[in-house]
Amino acid sequence: QVQLVESGGGSAQAGGSLRLSCAVSGNTAAGIYLVWFRQAPGKKREGVAALGRKGTTTYADFVKGRFSISKDNAKSTLYLQMDSLKPDDSAMYYCAADYSDTGRWNNPDVYAYWGQGTQVTVSS
Image 1 (tube, rainbow, N blue to C red):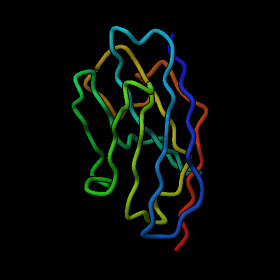
Image 2 (image 1 turned 90 degrees about the horizontal axis):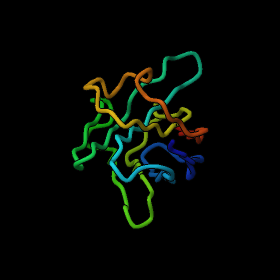
Image 3 (image 1 turned 180 degrees about the horizontal axis):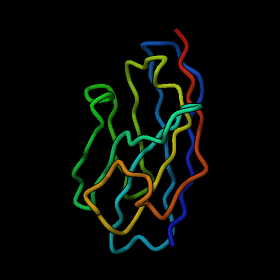
Image 4 (image 1 turned 90 degrees about the vertical axis):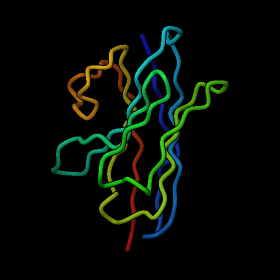
């Protein structure tokens, strides 16, 4: 079992920055695959960025160069640094985890563990 709790959402102006945090707890000693997803009203949940067990990172094309995923192992916290924000980035952001790397990182159906989400709103 893994528990995930997101924080850090809020409002920002276009071009601004926010940093999301996801506190990770539970049975993670063997390593887990961590992903940030987002979902805007009326849209499907989409993968934003992933962090593999060995530290490899993967990004959706629409955030490359703007967002950065990282993890502080001492604090057991996953981060998503979001820079150069756009109004289209407005969504509920979720942290997700699973023990397996299925190779389908941006498919929400493969993740067993989810946080409650944190809202990000970007105004123009």
